[in-house]
Image (cartoon, rainbow, N blue to C red; front, top):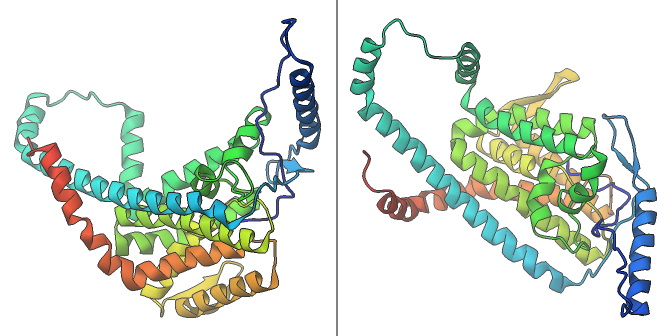
Amino acid sequence: MALNRLGGLWLCSTKSTLLHNNPPFKFAKAARSFRKVRSNVKRQQELKINSDSLETPFSNLHVESGDLSVGKLWKPFLFTIGFSGATFVGCAIWEYEHLRAHASKMLKKPIRFFRKQEEFGVDRSNQLTKELNKWWNSLTPGQKVFAPICALNLLVFAAMRIPRLQPFMLNYFTSNPGSPHQCLPMILSTFSHYSGFHLLANMYVLHSFSTGAVQSLGKEQFLGLYLSAGVISSFTSYLYKILRKQPGLSLGASGSIMAILAYVCVQYPETKLGIILLPFFTFSAGTAIKFIVGLDTAGVLMGWKFFDHAAHLGGAATGVGWALWGNQNIWPQREPVLKYWHQLRGSIK
């Protein structure tokens, strides 16, 4: 759930300004420095810390409104296109390197067999490493993709609750079209969460749908869709807020998760889904995605602000578009990139 409920914050730098002792220092510059110091003091008073780890650590925050003209969308728009393209290229190369490593391993298999015979009876492995490898190999491909994404979200969640890191985290891990920092937060904000319940709900949904999506897409294409949907949903949120002239902060992985959910629901519309607290109530995946999109559409039209409904719609549109068109027309076009990369890497040795 990409939340849009943070009351606000100052996205300015926290570096305090020191006055020099040089005699020629002008009074006007000193006055500006004093105002910056006073602003930082006021801001520190407003950034109150909530020690409850299951709730948001922030209260009494103020949104940086800035310039909300349509012209500010150019940089986020170009970043969205560039990041999405680079993500899919990177994931295609990752797929190539995975296949290359497997081929190299198979070529060296006889050598490793004889080496093993020579070292028979000698155990050079650490027991902990063995157990970790055993656990990792027992996971499904979907779980292997989910685990690092979940771990990264947990690290960001913990970092958001460290007072010294909060100014940086608020600058770069929450997205706001009125902020001077627009591009990087479009992707980084998809790894931060407002509360423990927000994080738990998003990770539960991602875990539920990641296995089916990875089986259909493969881990490389899955990651490309997940990351690209994150920036596309952030851009959709920017567009909505600028058109309505309503600045606000957004954070959460639900834009990316909505893309995965929408993809699975479009590919397998007859799959039966349920609600964790109501196991007796089931419905088809096709019905679920229609209801969710309808709810978010109503949220956009009615101006609801608890969730970032525009970001949800952006993510859902990405997932539906990839299921209906991108998977058949974009991903297969990676062959020229892989051919060029293979020429750079050379033959397998």
